Length: 372
Image (cartoon, rainbow, N blue to C red; front, side, top):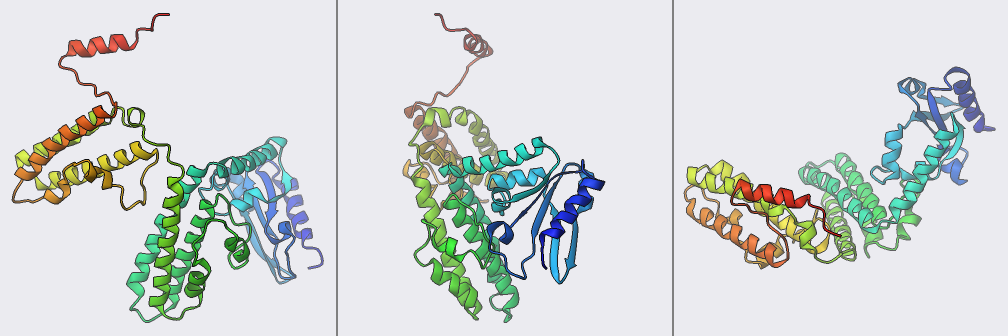
């Protein structure tokens, strides 16, 4: 087209004339915003509806053999993009405004850009987002494991594509950034990321080029492991050290109810109840111990139960047996006492009352203002 922005002008004029209050903002992003457009480049539009009526203005069309997509992004989705909770953060960060309904709408977009900067400066938060992103990769890896002997490569490559793009999004989050260009055009930015696996380029090439499903799967698994190790290593740099009194205040008082459920299940020889309570409480205690030690949750860490074992806490999950409940019943008594002792040693106050009178006295004292 001679002037692709004639399309933008037409759409903006249509909005101004017919629905100025229904659309808060129109902007474009991508190659034209970045100055990298070619003769076949389309103009990447989006608009933010001000109300439900605004969504009706969405339209996709081809003009002079160039495709256009005038698509809506809600303010809520824009918020998620700005918080790095959804891909395409660059749309908010690097768009060029074509139309705003009001200065309030402009200010709202600019505030989202500030949020992007503020969020990217929070290292532990961004590392946590990178770790969360990796969870989705395992779905693709599982699907590949089901397809590896199917003989066809098309579906296999689809899952490998899903794994690879998710892994790279995780890597960007780990580096506290976002990709400014689309897949296939952002390799330079990918390879310039400070934190990345040594074999990143090699594994990417194997995933994209190999004709053998097993090789693609192996490369995806290896890249997943390499990035996970980077994430966990980076997470360690944000450790705030142990702090039991604040992080585990009230923990025992809550978890005791689950320990009592195990006792009851053992007495009643109720294996189903014992199974869920015993495995669940062991995992919960291990997670909280990890949090108390480091100041962040284990998430995808594979060794977070190590401290639980080092403290000599009984492995109740291994004692589950529908024919014999006595070992589990003994273990829960042991765990109860060991947990209390450990928390007290670490300075955690455990609230135990022998009577209503004691509780009433505690509640009264709690609201007595300290003397000057």
